Length: 389
Ligand SMILES: Cc1cc2nc3c(=O)[nH]c(=O)nc-3n(C[C@H](O)[C@H](O)[C@H](O)COP(=O)(O)OP(=O)(O)OC[C@H]3O[C@@H](n4cnc5c(N)ncnc54)[C@H](O)[C@@H]3O)c2cc1C
Image (cartoon, rainbow, N blue to C red; front, side, top):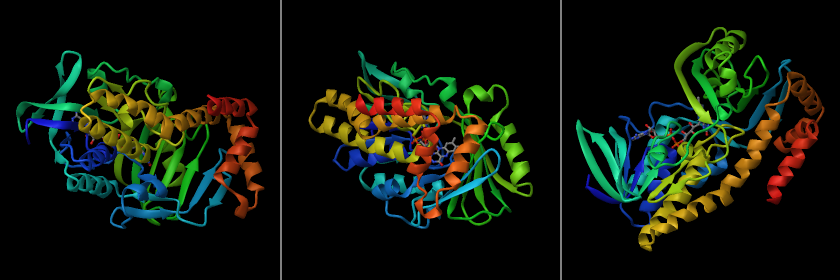
């Protein structure tokens, strides 16, 4: 490890290593610091990603794909199930331990240096400008300088706060999640299952994402406000007892997912935030792998351009670039989320009942949303406003 780099990335999740890769590909020097011993572990994720985005970044390989998804199943509070068959692979359930590792290898092959067990505990400042990080590494406190620091340090991000960026997410939008990987169950390995209902997962959904016919990531996210009344774990236990009473539990994870729009400010002097740290998660699905990688690509390219042009102010173009590519869409998804999660159980039952009447060959996600939105015309107006801004 040198004591100075063009760019330091804090966190070797998918967002951080993708930013490192795209910056290093432009010939600038990049260091990634990861606090954990291993890249990609521990896994706190249900591991679903859409195929289109994943394929943009990495060649599909069964060593990091557990299952190929071509169907969605929606289960209403009264237990009626509606299936959408896309007739082609739309997504993957990853083996994230390997996937994250592969992304890190790609970044490293592009020229980025990656160091694990390096805990970043502060920022170096020159006047008002961030000029590097302080870290604990092999029992020593070290200072490493850089022209730009990229904070990709996940949901609990501290880098942004250290730089004075407001990173607070309202409790309502912080989904409280609990998940197990369960075996000795029976599921269709090509189908994602989503369950809705006040007693199932209020302000969120309960998921069963299969890794094989007999193993799945099973979990839920509930709105932080709901979690004050009854915990995510308690809801999960109820659902498991009802639906998978004989499941063996192989892993258990808990975590928060910021299901909100992106932070208002994701850059400051010498600093850029991305991935969960910037709240770049899709607020409707709670998925942050793909959007974190997209944020990583944008941030990595812009950071490298700023170095190469010797014009550090260029990093401020990242906010607009992100907004145009994804941020604006996330605002729409956020409004959809707010509308959908305000539905009563009766609303959900009615929507599913209507959707069941659509012939299987004509069912699409778009049609499902149209039926859902017909229930809440005010939401449609709200969404069209977003497109008009
Ligand atoms: C239960 C659950 C289920 C989920 N399911 C899905 C899903 O199915 N699909 C999906 O797309 N998303 C899912 N998500 C969200 C997804 O996991 C995240 O959005 C994604 O991992 C974000 O990537 P990231 O690179 O921004 O952050 P992370 O993957 O969290 O990586 C951040 C990295 O920074 C490191 N770090 C933090 N602080 C420091 C420090 N001070 N110094 C050095 N390193 C540091 C961490 O160790 C970590 O490796 C789920 C989340 C949860 C909790």
